[in-house]
Every structure is written in structure tokens, then in C-alpha cells.
Amino acid sequence: MTAPSDRARFLIIDDHPLFREALHSAVQMAYPDVDTVEARSIAEALELLSGTKPFDLALLDLSMPDVHGFEGLLQLRTRYPRLPVVIVSGYEEPKIISEALSYGAAGFIPKSARKSDLAAAIRSVMDGAVYVPENYEGQPPDPDSTDRADMVQRLARLTPQQLRVLQMLRQGMLNKQIAYELQVGETTVKAHVSEILRKLNVYSRTQAVIEVSKLDNAELFRDQAGF
Image 1: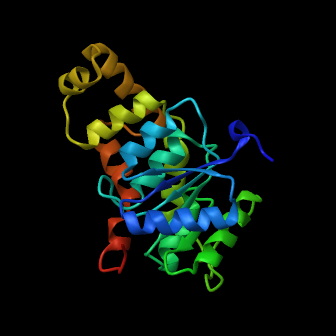
Image 2: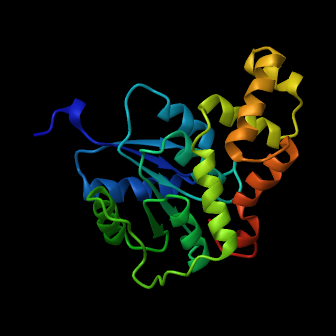
């Protein structure tokens, strides 16, 4: 029997208690001995991931209260690039699945899937495969998708602190406000901003915000039925 310290650890990120319970049940069906931890927001998930005990898999709902569109997936992928992240979502449009995969998702499981199918999908991802629904037909990348995928690669070069600064820039915060929040000097913030612009290959903080905001893909989620 596997020792408790050697057990796999899964992180379920969903703000709906009933579906967290359903996912937990599917995980237990696939891996009875797994340790499952739950997060109700991206912020809570990031706090858990920053702990000393690593996770082997994250199961993420796209529709979370503290992020928009693919922002939650992007935060997880850029901060923890080695962590497989599987999307479990009520959004089942082929375009959304394609975008999620282009941003590095390890799989996409519809929330409409049966528990046995959820369990099989989780096992498939843990075996190294990328899971997609049986009826999914891949779409050829368009220029916008290619540009967004390239920006994701550039975001991966940012340090955790630079990602925090970028998030604050997106919130419209000034350097002095960012310095106050991070408890650092304004000179340090300016250095972070300069590195962010360099790594993202943009020329101003406004351009950085505009380019990164395109990754949210809010238009993909408009008028879609989801949870």
C-alpha cells in the first residue's frame, strides 16, 4: 500500500460546492488513495500551490468569481508550468476547447460528462495523454490564436513577482500604489515594469495591458451556457 507521504495530490478548483463534491467522487473512483484538496477561487488555489507539498494535478473550472475567461488557467500555467491543469467546464464550444489547449491545458472535460467518464479522463491525463471529448474536432489555428499562444509563452518568462506587478497594472494601479501593496520601493517597481515590457516585447505599460487582456477572450464566453 502506498505510504501517505507518497500519495498523489489533486487540487480541485471550483466555486460550486456540489460540483466540487462530484469531482471529488470522480477522483476517488479513479484513484482511491489520492489526497484531494479543494479551492473555491484562483487566489485560494495559488495560496495552496505555494505550500511546501506539491500537487500532481489541478482540475479547474473556467468560470471562477475572481477571474475572467482564461485568466485563471493562464495564472496557473505561468506560475506553475510543470503542473498539469485539466479544465472541467460547462463551456463546451470547440473554439473554447481549442483555446484552452493552446494555452497549455492538459485536457478538457465537459461538466456534462458522467462520473465514470470523468474518472477515465483523469486517469488518461495522469498517464500522460491530453484528454478531449470524443466529439471534439480540432480547429486550425487562426492568426489571433497564434498571437495569443505566443503571448502565453512570453508570460511564462515572468517571475512570480513580475506577474503580480502585471496583474496590478491591469487593475490600473500606479507605481506608488504597487510599491505600497508589495512593500517595496518605487524604484523596484519601475525595474519590474521595465523587465515586464522587455519580456513581453511591448513598448509601454498600456500596450502590455492591452495585449495581455486579449488573452481573457471574454467574447468567447459571451452568451454561452456555463456554470
